[in-house]
Image (cartoon, rainbow, N blue to C red; front, side):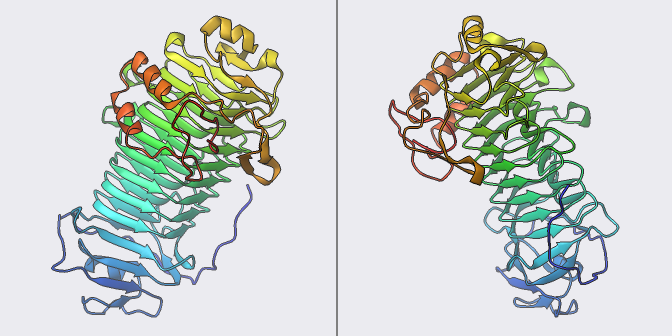
Length: 447
């Protein structure tokens, strides 16, 4: 895998730091700084500048802000802080040359353990043996505008963490696995507007892991506005991979030039009750280069209650565009998509990668009656511009939002998803409003 350039190391020493888990807030909001020219013996007073994370973090409480100035700082840090929503702890970087490097004697560079109401903003983390930024048993944490690159296994990793938001981040160059990996029964999550690329495995992997405690299911998630490209070599996986996930909205994501799967929804262990159920996969664009990649969307054997609509799936020519292996076919609804890139006789894959024509698929399932087989007419796919040109068949191809709601209601059990549809802004990947009426587009961009 190609490696990526990063600021040069200053030869920083390593450490592991633990702070007590006590819900606290400082007497008043204070701002501290971290700089190579700082002093870890500085008094605990607003404006103090420390030299190392080891020196700074014991002084931080709820309501405080630590600003990391340009320089290289040793990773391998564990933080425990319980803060309030009114007074979160904020740790933010001054810019792209504020770098947390390596994991010291630990496996991960920057870990939050049992943290509540903590915000990480703009951190740059690299060269950890395992994970760059890790959330373990956390709640109400926001990680935004961070870059986690060239780490041993994951850019960002969570376990048993819930009610968190990962947004506006970039994760690339994970040697052995994924860009973002959300695991172990963590509910109520948002993974939004991230860029995931050149990772060995998935761009985004969400895995409930029944074998690791909890209920084995990840529930109530929003995966939207993410851009995933050049993931899946050599490990495989998918641009967006979901295992043991229930009640999820996957919308406005752009997946292009990946080497393995597109959007996958399945389970690999556990009971049927712990399987993947109730997904809305809407207004995504999945594009493969010729001769590369698998299917655009893959609904595996035990998965049920899925609506796939208003998407663009372009095959690389070696696999179909839509793959449905589910044994619960009446509860899998697919329609109003635009598909392209492979002969119509092999457009859909059924159980065992058996390829069938669009006509056979329609007759067998009643699905994709309003789906169009046509070149979507991207502005310039070679230059990764997947906006739609004038005359694109994706314009006006989509299922109207009210019909989406009616279909979910007929399938049953989508109460949470329907509630979120009423709250989320009705926009495309670029933030432009979509047409709220009967004429609605397909794909991540457009009306």
